[in-house]
Length: 302
Image 1: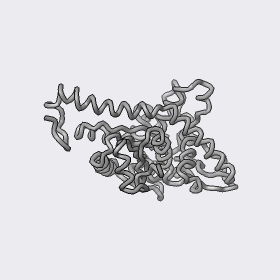
Image 2: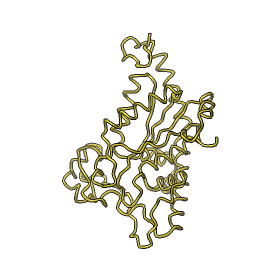
Image 3: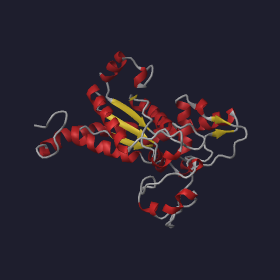
Image 4: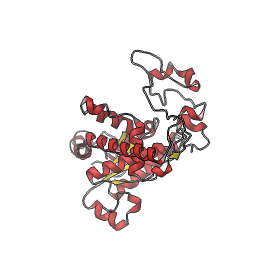
């Protein structure tokens, strides 16, 4: 296709696409402080992954959704704040629109720690209301899954969130947004937040010491409400490069990593199972439980 980004296609091209397929990836992220990275970094990561996945299964990508709940990063002056509820309602309206347009297989891609609060609710409620199974995936979880599917030697080359994200800056053509600073300090990387067998997270900044025990018993991002006490507490010096050459090399290697991750995930199987689940729901489940399950908001089961 000329492009897989929905907003860059003409209506004629979209209608032609929908004659043969119904898959759309929706990258979702916040605009928030993250070291020296652009504020949209946790949107660009999912956008790049969505673009790579769309190529695997002849899907489209809905872009531009980058103002959602940011939680602890609200202390950054560049952070655009959005409540979980408002983000949920916005995405639900989009999900209904996409379904009425003909996109029955919607896959939301995120890379932000608190996205589960919005996307988990969206996927569950939308299915109850429509019986159309939409799905969401997390960039970190996708990368971890890919590592588990390759041999030890190959897995050793899979590093972290930032590797795949820099690859997304390459595939989306946005690497020029990354900072070039010949005087920049060595960039910090996301390592293990805690060591196995210990009940306290390691290396937490001062602003999080008060909750070092609490966050062992739920998701780190939303086991308790907290704010970052310093803008360097989220991302450190990530995003700054000493030279254009260094930036380009990191982004090139990151793209290689991103494409390997997407290959390992088996996106064709993912979208096939979405179709299979829809068929099962609207045949077997409808026949057995259609009179007692929540009624559809689009059309009732009869």
